[in-house]
Image (cartoon, rainbow, N blue to C red; front, top):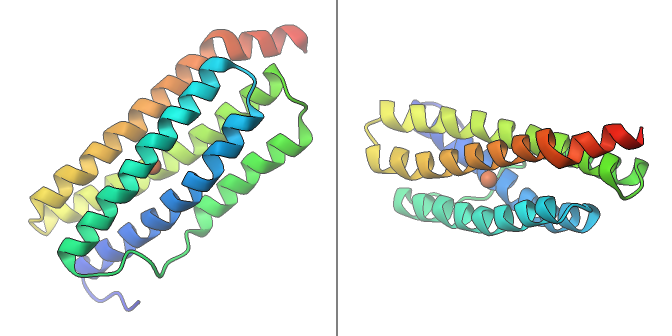
Length: 165
Ligand SMILES: [Fe+2]
């Protein structure tokens, strides 16, 4: 896709996020399966539901703007998900793997927050306030997930991981 304006740059950014979200939608059930902590499993499950809603939001924005959501592959997210898979492959099920999964998931959340933050700023600059508001909802959900993961990392999961080290 040729990017020749802030509007097409916004479209590009959102296509990238759409690709990221659909990759995350596939990865989250594997992360839930790989986790031991019930709280962590629940956090992944809850975020899967949110992610489905986030995908829908992007589809609605694209429909409104008359662009297809597809056409980009988010390499950054692919790399982050691959790192999560490496954690699963190299650490046996248990507290230490959970701690690693939280780290991998938080990297993904921060990556998404950067992407949505940028998209919100572009949309506002273009006067697309409704789109900016919709994207802000997703940005807030990613932030909330990140805080939940931080809390889990600080509470049971990492403490137990240290105890078994
Ligand atoms: Fe997301």
